Image (tube, rainbow, N blue to C red; front, side, top):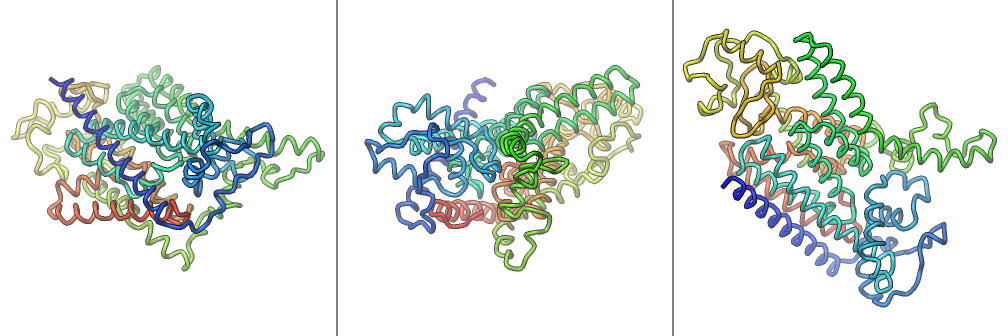
Length: 501
């Protein structure tokens, strides 16, 4: 019966994800037909610098080819160009290689018979659209599974998944952008992490670092887990476990950073070494001579003016307003979690042994049923020595059997069943908080809409408000209204080459 229920959940998630993709893609086609592009330069198809990279000819179906190429707008221009011609110019190194390589591979294998009919560039466009369609459906399924583990509430997990499928940045997940692939790898990595498969998680996070630069931040989950395990080992004076934990954490973190560092090395060798050999040490580009030649940072700063407080100008106020819904949800979710888990957050979720008062109840636990209390605890409380003994068992790595095996988290207070305020959410929330600071103070702030769309706590908190807040009807209308408004607005502006985020 349980396996049948899980299969039913999977079918519902996939069905909803497919329907939302069809809906968003339908809006893209509708607005592209009805609208007029602000900038038509994306339709220009200049030859590659290397004439052997691609073949130019008149396709058999020129009208269909032109229609597919109309979806190559904004950053999709770079992704398709990289897939077709490789990394030709310095600014293209702002876009990491895994997604363009996927597009190229599918175009030259699965869709190679379409190239004579559509042309190579249009075939690349079709491959990108179909890949993202499938990537997103799989990512929605992984997101639902992660939500189910953290929230321990299938209804809330499904609502969170529905919000993700219609998030304000939906247009980017349907277009030829890397968001869908990045979300798939992120949620798959989180699922492995929550199941205790740290090595698998590190590999998935590493690949995500080859899709988008913020994938390297996922290494923080492994560091957080390593610190927890080290504290437990030090408390128990198990030095062998401590050394093994430290050794594993270093390797896992190196794995996560590997693809991004390798890509920076590739850029240095391509743009600096070749010039150095001809110029006797006089580098062609200023970043090449830096003590730490960081190509990605230079490209973002030089070509897109990304930097600390550079966007804090009066003329950028409309962009701050554009990003305000997603930023408001992110900030509110963080404040709410800290408000309900003050002692847990104060110790960063790492304190594992402290005498516990006779009854410690956080604010959100006041209305929880007796089932959410520690195993063996009665509604009248229990002896302090027994509670300390249970805390110590947890610190030694004991697991709580509650239907299925799951990691037990010990901290100052009680162990909760789940929900938005679950301890499992803490490291994920911390990553979101860091990304929010980066979006506000370093990046172009309007990009926060899609930059933060990868953060699960935003959808978990929105679902929490819709389900459990005293004014849940108001929040339901407000959140769904804002999400759907951005879906319509984004699809209208984006496909017609007007600035959105």
